[in-house]
Length: 274
Image (tube, rainbow, N blue to C red):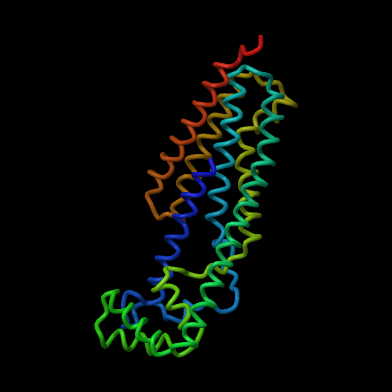
């Protein structure tokens, strides 16, 4: 299910680049947009919990789908509920740690790449400032500005080095610096994966205390997983800006297919070795 997370992460970064570029003033110079100062790489800024919603949604979706697939496979093989708990909890912790670590390494690598490109742009400005001004002017023209508007924007963007570097990175390279904390992204992913992934296992944990028939336990796990998948799929709108109903149904379908495949494999192999 890591492919789902990668596609969602790409959507988050693409949407963030579009939002920041728009806020930076690419839609006009008449004051209706946010000031271009908002670009700057500057010192690291804490964007608050909202900046980590994407990581929580991705982690939660992967957690539910992978754990529910384990539950479905074991249920299809008609194995004891203790096997579901052993495999489910083991998968939950191991995959959650893997997801969090992968998110951390990915975010940190992207930050290192952004820093390297920022240093390169700063060096080019230092080496040939007039040439970089002309390049920035041409980039604004490519975005549909008139010559006079482009000149005004160039004058605004080249007042400080940080602003100048940021403008070139956004317009020339399509890079928007991500100031969020890689460790917090990793923690958000791990916690969301574990919390959401525990839902399909909840009824089996309760079954350790109160006896529950296997069929009823599996039906409850299906219901909880379906509701969680739809809810988290709808929550993708915070990142993708798509229809919440469409996103919810899409993730419900993906999770359902994964569970059905796992259940079918379990059912097909339940007599293996007997």
